[in-house]
Length: 89
Image (cartoon, rainbow, N blue to C red; front, side):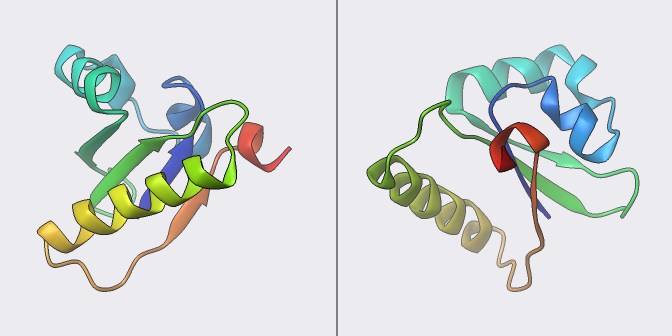
């Protein structure tokens, strides 16, 4: 699963995960605008990615490149994308 959010707090909203309370997760997410975690609902590894508030097409392409690189590094071939409500608006 790949979760796209604007802010760290939106991860809890998107999937109900309390991973955002972990200091190491917060630091990884802040530094890389991406972080891996184990999803309590699926029992599988998930990737959280940060999307800029007013993302341009170039920003989206860079994010796509980052997500593909992250997902292929773990040899993940099937992915479900979850978008926070803030991104969909």
